[in-house]
Amino acid sequence: MAGCVLGHRRLSILDLSDSAAQPMLSPDGKIGLVFNGEIYNFQEIRAELERCGHRFRTTSDTEVVLALYREKKEAMLEDLNGMFSLAIWDCEEKRLFLARDRVGKKPLYYYAGHGTLSFASELSSLVLDPRVSTELRSQALFEYLLYDFVPAPHTIFQDVHKLPAAHYAIFNSQGLQIRRYWNPPEPNPAADYRESIERLRELLADAVRMRLISDVPLGAFLSGGIDSTLVTSFMQQGTSGNVKTFSISFPGTTYDESQWSRLAAGSLGTEHREYSVEYDIAGIFSKIVEHFGEPFGDSSAIPTWLLSEKTRGHVTVALSGDGGDELFAGYERYLARRFQLMYDQVPAVCRERIIEPFIRRLPATTAYYGTSLSKKLKLFIDASRRIREDPLAVIPRTFTREQVIQLTGSDYEIDDDPALEAARQWVGLDPVSRMQFTDIQTYMAEDILTKVDRMSMAHALEVRSPLLDYRVVELACSMPLGFKIALGTTKRILKDTARGQIPDAILKRSKYGFQVPLGAWFKGELKSWAEERLFDVSHGHFNRPFVERIWNEHLLGRSDHTHRLWLLLVFNEWAHQTARGVG
Image (tube, rainbow, N blue to C red; front, side):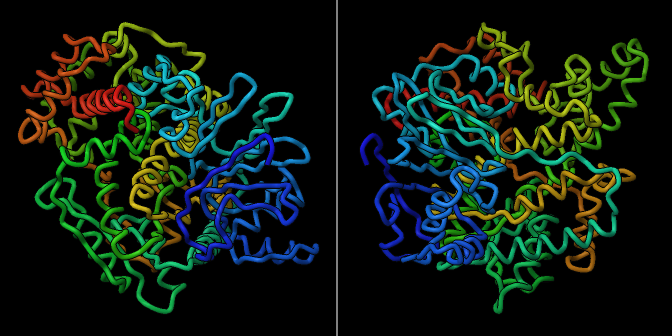
């Protein structure tokens, strides 16, 4: 194909034959496609295309995507239900068409310059192009230290961008044009609660059914939370045998959820495997950092790596409960945001001279915040102050802006921050919904889904998320906030949908994050390992006295700097790998 080179490495899920290999060409050889992901409604689309005269030589969804483009061009995206990033070269029109799924399950990076465009699903592949500079984008470093991730369209590299979720791009002789093709609907105050429960139950059952289509073995992640248990319940109903389920446990820590996964598995009758893992942080740390291609600071990547590794020993596809917290307001910070609105009415002198100084004097702890009242209170007053000062700053932050300036010696362009721009889009919503919708566009897409995709694909495991079926997303977003939060309860409608289908104890349990006790380990078995990687660095981006101060405060128990230290460790390792040409 003159003017374009396409390449692909395939994880075969549907139609395992060589005839479904990529790049795939149209019958006349004028259109070529590379495609990462799965289209769950491809059989329905194929039947419609056959009625229009198209003929197929494979049973793959890839060929269906190619035929759909020939029929509808970029309007094809309205028909696709799935997770995908794709690239189509059209010889006749001399244009490259790029697209990413609605919620951002699959990644797509690109570089445009000197009249050319390069793209890849991994940063490590893209930077092999000699035209692509690895100069660091200081704005992205600042954003990483704020949010734990680099929000799209930025990457850590100055000249490389992410194609944001729900966007497509066209590159031709006129240059590069990028357009959004989908937005979640805003809440409808006239929605009926009972009708919404029935519609949600119907959509979830169908979303799970569609994701059971596979030519390879499949199973499910089962933590024992509401989301994964409900997905597994629908999965069990849709299969003839027992579903294979998988979890990992952290015995003896406040992060151990094994009792809940066992309860869920026993109630649903799944073929469950629970792995009590021994963490070898030193052994897997560099591998984890390498697979992200840029600094990524969510430490739950560690258990996700281990769970994916164990699960891949038995199946090639796993269903998960990702998306439930963002769509149905499952995070405690949504409740906290409601309380903040009342707290802000307290006279400033009382807040600043009595309440907040008292809370800051409470003992620091490295325990999981879900089991620590003092940690919850500290997070609450920090978030309250941040949002009072900037109502758009609704995404959680690890370092404050002032701390990043002390650490790096540089400031950033507020107007160029994609997370703030996402929040600005939803200023017409109530404060809690604004936080939730911003999370869907930023935190969910660029943290949660990025983590799961990179850690699972590192082990050749495909993870499918029924709760992120775009029909479920649209229904959830169209619900009034009262359907999700009521009387101090989160996920109200999801719980009512699941009632009678999963154990009541799971419906009533508190939410736990997928975390590991890094803070305690930094004071114990990981102390020497972390100290070496914090201070034996040559990149020069961080102020050493600042790093020494937070390290010593953490060791002495004066503050819990676990997540801040983890961000620094990850960046230092990434910088080291980049300097050596690794990743």
